[in-house]
Image (cartoon, rainbow, N blue to C red):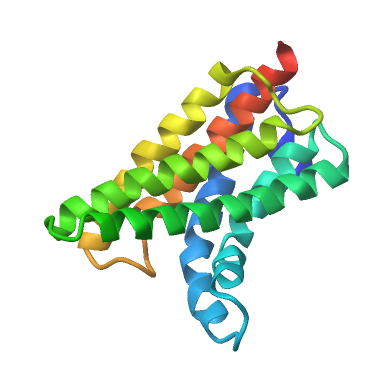
Length: 188
C-alpha cells in the first residue's frame, strides 16, 4: 500500500490513491482533537502539532519515495510545524478582523492559514535532497492550500468542526498537489 501511495509511475491511478489517503487523513484529523485534548499539560503548539499527525504520515510516505528516511521524517515534522503556523496565522487574522462579520473573518482566517501552512510546508520540503527547488513547482500547492483554507469557513459556519466535510477535500488536494510537485521536481 505504501508503495502504491508513493509511486508516481502511473500518474492517474496513483494520484487517486494519494487523494484517497488525503481524504482519510482529512477525516481522521478533526477526530484526533478530542483525543489530544485529553493530554494534560504540554504547550498548546505541541498539541496542535499532534493533530497534524494523520496528514504528516501521508507526507512522510510521499516524500520517502525520492528521499532517504531522515528526509521523509523531516518533511513530516515540517508538515506538523506548518499546521501550527497555519492555525496561529488564522487565529491572528481572525483577531485583526475583529469588527467584521463572522463569516468574513472565517474566510480571511482560512485564506491566511491555508497560505501560511502550505507555504511553510512547501518551503521545508523544497529544501530536502530531492525536493523541487523551482518556485513555480510549488505554486499549485500554495494556491490549493490557500483557496481550500477559505472553504473551511463554510464548515465552520455549518458547525461541522468534528465532522468536517471540506477538510478531507483540502487534505486530498494538498496531498495530490504535493505528489505532483515531487514528480515534477524529479523530472526536471
